[in-house]
Image (cartoon, rainbow, N blue to C red; front, side):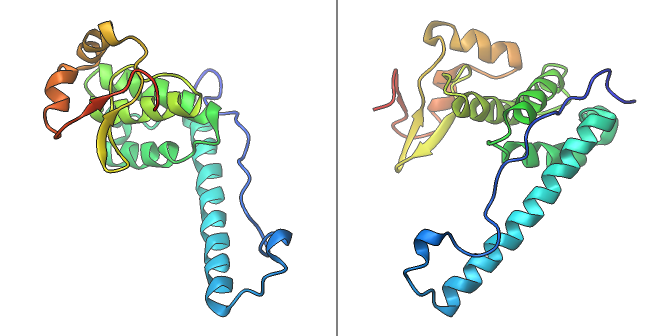
Length: 179
């Protein structure tokens, strides 16, 4: 069933093409560096193709919800969206769709929290759910939207308290602002 309106109408992020940037022209690139650049361009071309495919899929059929499409397909689409930080409309659309699945217990809330945190981080906003991540060799929770209500937010999506989550990791630091 196609969505009432397209879920995705974002821009297509820019990626390197052709030869290395002119600023590198003064430095003669060895064979290894040239091959690395070629591989990077090939990977970027595949990434653009995957992004176009995901955008087209979202526009035509909506989110590939796990209950309808199976978890594996939904998970792979989630991973593709997770790595499209330069496409905010796509990330916002997928975050909303994955949240619906997580609240209905059709998608793991832990995975939703990762996407939600990344989307907010890219947009310069604070984390709502207290996602624990490894930064500079330390386990940290970034600045929170509302430290007093973080456990309420986590409970609403099906997660336990932040204190219980952070005890899984040694010496977790919760920042009120980035150092």
